[in-house]
View (cartoon, rainbow, N blue to C red):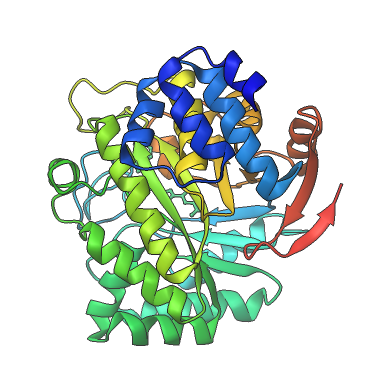
Length: 367
Ligand code: V47
């Protein structure tokens, strides 16, 4: 490893590299040094070293579709370009019949996951959401339902006058397979109150995920980056996730979400850059030593950065993603759909082995 250490240009990273090579856990200061460094190749080398120990040359991907049942939302998150009030132009709400029709209209051949998130609709009750999951599962028993952020679960539970635990138990019974990581944003309370003052706190987000884990429901975690947060906020966010994962082990993947500025209400906001995106993915790989998977969401990163990230600690590409709406509203440039063959090619040309997985990381095929 001495030879490798000689190649590290940013000498502040040497002590971090030594910890990584000796298997020692990184701390807050290490995380900050990594984010503050522009020695992207060294950070990438380290992240790749850690990833290859965990995942060898495998890169996971999935064949999935997104359904967003409504954009009407009582929340007012400033980064969200998707939300509408009832009666606004472009506001929509899908009945369960319409959701099923929409799914019927998509080519579901080989689809293993439906990803469902949407607004907090002022009129929808507990039973509506439960029925939605039940009817989708009845119609497509072969598709795993990854649905509802922690924020939505809390809202649904409140609508039904139930605890989060009872709600999750009931949703699991009717077909909920796992939960997405949306709503993580940035945990720091000051930043959170600037971005989304009405949203559940970091503690609530983590408690809901931990409750799901204890009930055998796997979840993902996210961090929305590139708006008004600092590197310190990012490190704090990642270390809070690592601590929660130490407790339950129920997180499957971490997904850094690159902020998109169009139609949002964040002053002076701009798109993230490739360097910041790649660095954030790599540092996430290094700090989250207890997460198996770091996922590049190509819808937000673009196909090219997502592919390059496979050299910087990423082992998971989500996914074929038909019908994504949230990023489209905020100025997505990447497109809406990626054929499976293209995902396989992106992974192969990075010299890695494409592994198709379902929502629970069961292996469907190795290419
Ligand atoms: O919670 C909202 C984010 C999330 C913007 O768990 C924005 O497998 C960028 O969580 N720019 C929803 N991001 C998406 C999400 C997700 C996506 C893919 C996979 C998984 C998973 C989860 O999108 C929201 C919010 O954090 N978001 N507005 C925006 N302007």
